[in-house]
Amino acid sequence: MASAPQNSMPLFYKELVAISLEDHANLRTRKTDKPTWLANQHAIPLTVEEFPAAQRHYPIVFSIGDNPVPLALMGMSEGINVFISEDGQIEEEIYIPAYARRYPFMLAKLSPDAEELSLCFDPTSNLVGEFEDGTPLFEDGQPSEQIKGTLSFCEQFELAGNKTANFVKELEKHELLMDGELTFNRDDLEKPVVYRGFKIINEEKLRDLRGDVLRTWNKNGMLPLVFAHMLSLELVRDVFAKQANQSKLPTQSDAPAAGEAENTGEGDSTT
Image 1: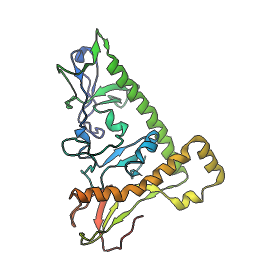
Image 2: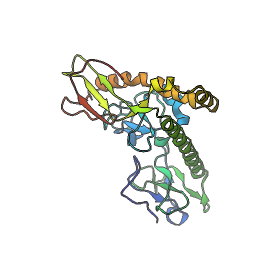
Image 3: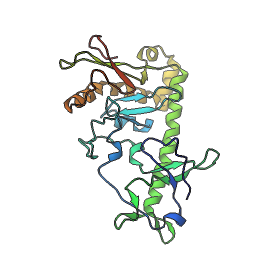
């Protein structure tokens, strides 16, 4: 039974095991309408293909550091998802990112020098096991239609991930990503709360971009994705309001957020 290294597990995953007929002939997978693995996660990776659907429900930002990735901001503070309750109940109809929908499966290299990706699952999940219900992983010694569909979904996700990486590289090439900052003030707060630790597209630099670049982006579909990201930022106040209504705002001394947050004496603004 081949397992992936334990020191660098992707978000949600505690362990990864490659699916094989020898080890998993009797296992079944079952579905759930309560994604508990999302309950305490405030920022979920997105692919660019998801921008049009995702931007209607929550802000899309980019991670900091090397190789930024787009993120669905489902809560303002670390460990808080304002759309998913503690028991995994989806509080309102929203778009669930493909990154989360593929769980507990994913394609992964089981060793750094591996040339191919293997279809793996997280054995700590309660969605795969020797159940009486659910769909078998294998039927008559062959992968079931369910697992074939799962493999196809994960393959499409990897392709979308490559497109997303190219999209971000293009933004970085033109130095369009800048550090973001969100400041919120309410009557029930002693001081405004400032959230940092994420990146957004710099509107001023976008306006100054050469016409030939913009025309190329318009033709290849990149420009609508840029606008989807920028329009989605209007929803940050909605997410903050939901968190406030759920009594989950950070304390005045502890406000980790979309990256980090701190309280200042600045006026009310959003950048």
